[in-house]
Image (tube, rainbow, N blue to C red; front, side):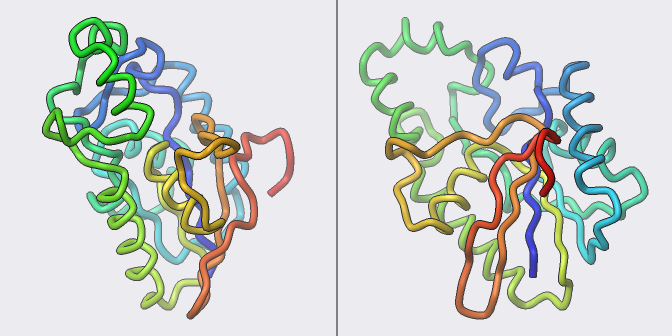
Length: 197
């Protein structure tokens, strides 16, 4: 099976520099263009299943990119929860929590604020991969988020998602993974239409 994971287009949170986590924020006009570009990359692929996170930015991206697809909403592929930081600007969090915020954000550990840790997000990512192993589809699309994509990448290449050299997928980009009975590997990372898949 080939798994195509699409990071949502630019959101109001991306543009505004604040934590969205598990709150709904819409795409910007640029985000809508990102989604349309992803749609061009995905055109003609015979998807057996199309999933989207239950958050608005992912659902909007899916509807623009694959307007004729039947989209299944799947909370399992949500972004990492950041608890009481949701809706707050990064600069505001830095001023309120200081160095501890900087370190927790660097490690993607939002448990001190009532959110999730990177380990918890990785468990959700692994559960998603295992769910897909049982499907008969040969091509699956999933519209998700940067944090979720980073954990998929780390699983595929066997690296810590917070290590140097690990890159964040661009808004509206398409990353492709291969799932076999005993393996999960990366085929291509963060395409935005500049290069073929």
